[in-house]
Image (cartoon, rainbow, N blue to C red):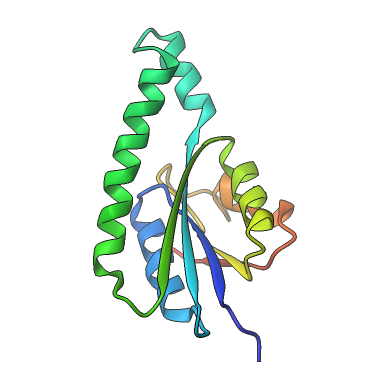
Length: 145
């Protein structure tokens, strides 16, 4: 049987990513099952905000990281104790960081929603499509419900 002991779930705090996390918690198997929640602070967003003089790059990243920490804590509250949850927050290009972290942690699969916070696309959201194309790991793509 195909075991899903370690799963990487990229989250942008949209309803779709929350559903992906919930599904990952259901399908994670094994005695030491782990779900890794990954939030990537998009470099393009931080650079644009800094260029618009919203604040310094460091201040913007710090505020986005604080928000991400709060959101991830809220994700974990209902998780329960049956599956270990680890959180990672990093900065970079989202699809690249997702693929890189999946390889770094040797996860059994990536669980991702078809669309994130930017809304629907024709078939897939840009990040989901790039993850599917670039990943050496299996990618479980969940439809929007």
